[in-house]
Image 1 (tube, rainbow over the protein chains, first blue to last red):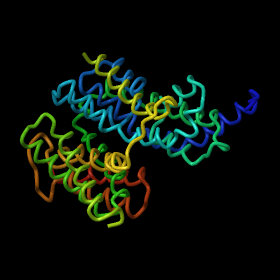
Image 2 (tube, each protein chain N blue to C red):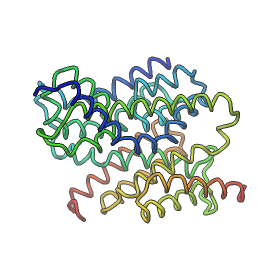
Image 3 (cartoon, rainbow over the protein chains, first blue to last red):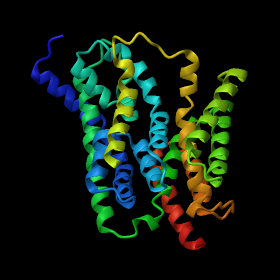
Image 4 (cartoon, helix red, strand yellow):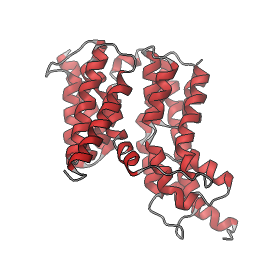
Length: 233
Length: 104
């Protein structure tokens, strides 16, 4: 498929404009990721490095929280693996349009495959899919995420006692807002209830792997429930 | 240590994202594995929220006047009513901060 530079640039710009609202909505997250890294005594470079290299908001915030709580490397990595495993599904879903791209496009777009990227590009079939459009979506979001992280790092270094503002509630507010619309059937209700109960119980018992164990138990409970009563139960 | 963690996390996240984009990979997730992974977002995100809501300052707080709990209830109600993640996040944070200063 021949691509003139002009057409490629236009598609790139269309993608960049399409992702703008989500890029702005991610601002509190980015600010939090930056300021929490500073709060947890990471250096500015390490805080920015998380956003530049890992580029996964939930995993970053959880890793920072676990670091602060003194969790070990293995349990942070296991949590990262579990927490970002939905990306396997995104990859599988985008396999028809991305697996036949040249290696450098697969690597590049694969790196940029976030929840938001998936939301913006997953509905295109092989004929409609434009890799330049996808690159515009992914790169714009990447730049926005890193700029808001930088702003969070600067704020975290200059405003003392940011940790006493209750900024951790914004994790709850964001996750609750993301979870609540997903709770549409019995299996998900069971999953959330088991996970919530176990996470508090295991944390009260001071288990180092409380979050992973609670999450896995919740997922298993939801899965078993779905198997027993069917998806629409 | 921290940089090792950052690069290892980066590698894990990238492998998750890239794994099924690799054309030479013959593997496919079984239907069961996919259903199980479908619970990853509600299951894992809930587990992260639980201790923050019910154990502020690392002490169990089951009081109904816990501002984290009240703020979460407000966030659930708002997102179900408005369907806007950003709006419910901002409004519930505002209410949380008001409640925290009143109840403290």
